[in-house]
Each structure stands twice: as C-alpha cells, then as structure tokens.
Amino acid sequence: MTTNSPAFASGQTSDLIDPKLAMGWMHTARFLTTAAQLHHLPTVDVPEIAFVGRSNAGKSTSINTLTQQKQLAFASKKPGRTQHINLFSLGKQGTTDAVLADLPGYGYAAVSRSDKERWQRVMLNYLMQRESLSAVVLLCDPRLGLTELDEALLDAIRPRVERGLKFLILLTKADKLTRSEQAKILSITKLNAGGGEVRMFSALKKQGVDEVAQLLWHWCHPAGLNSTATPLAAEAGAAPAVQPPATDTPAQ
Image 1: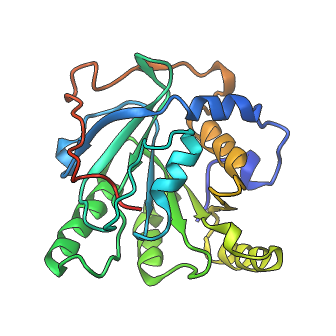
Image 2: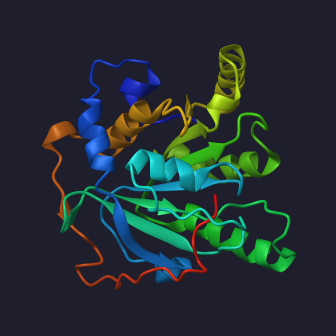
C-alpha cells in the first residue's frame, strides 16, 4: 500500500508546521452529529478522518488527548456496547477544515454475535462507501500487535488506499513499554503496515501527540497554510446535529 503524503512517507520534516498551530487546530474539535447507519450521516465536502480500533485500544482517550478535551469522546465503562458513528468538526466556529469520525470499538466479546455482525456490516459499508473519507487512523495496543481483526480492516481498505486513502497505525499505550520494546514493535508494525504511517503514542506521557497532530493537519491541508475552510455541511442543511444519548457514548 502507498500513501499520498510525500513529506511524511519519505521521512522529511522540513515542511512541518508549528506544532502549536496543529494542536490549536485539533483543539477546535466539537461534536457534529451521531448516527447508527451510514445513510444517516450528513454529507460533508471536507476531508474526513476515521478513528478505528479494538474496544480496548484506547481510542477515546487518544482522541481526547489529541484535541485537549477531557470529554469530547466519552470512554464507556462497557466497551463494545455502542454501535454509533460520532462525527466531530474541526475548524473555526461556523466553518470546518475537516471531520473526525469516531467509530465504535470492535472485537469485544460481551457483545452478541448478531450485534457484532450488524456493526461489522455498518463499518465495512462506511470504509468502502463514505465518499468524504480521506484517512483512517487504526489504533492498536502494541502489547498485542496487529490482531486478525486489525489485519482484516487493513485488507478491506487496501483498494481505497491504492487510490489515495491515507492511513496511520497508532501504537497506543507506549508508556507501558521500554524504549527497546517500543523500537522493536515499531519496526515490526512498519513491516506489516504496507506503506502506511506508524507512530508510537502515549496519552499519559504525551508521546507522539504533537507529531500526530501535525500529520493529520497536513493530510487535511494539502495546500498548506493557503487552505481555506468551508461552511459546515450540517449547517448547510445536510443533516441536523443531535447530541448523542448518554447510553451511546463511544467505547475505547
């Protein structure tokens, strides 16, 4: 697989923006809408970045850390129970540069088989059909490595990656590993990533936070600082934004 981010793919960092700008941009994230089915999501005409991963990969915590908001993505005490896609807009109030899509965690054993199969169909449809999807961030616990479900997801998006979809494997909970263990799992994951980006990340130690924010900013602003924001799709009448019910918070 290949990516369309030459500066990052080649390891060059000369074009990186100030981390404060990228982190400030991430901090503008705000709730847009929630939906249980793909056709209920609003149409947007800006880059959309989906966060996916197993229920215990620390997805909600990572989103909250990147956006510097403690409760933007709520971490359920019963992971895997939620089957909603939650969208968050990025950009100055009234405009948007990008949309973050928080997909429920997968692979949680306590969820019924029928619920698992239904959600897997919804997720597959989203990954295959969502026109505004520009990038996928796959969160993975480095102590477990890429599981069969993670590899199946990467296989599912492979055709879109070959057509330009960007993807990042985020190895969360890096603070649980020694430096040598981090270097080893990072090397192994890069070999299995098929050309995608791979980063170590720790919400506790703030490791990798600035770097990931910069990467996402560049993916959403291919024209650099000359990129312009557009009106929010939801405000344009694509779909009303509704607050997520208390029982439908995204699981880590």
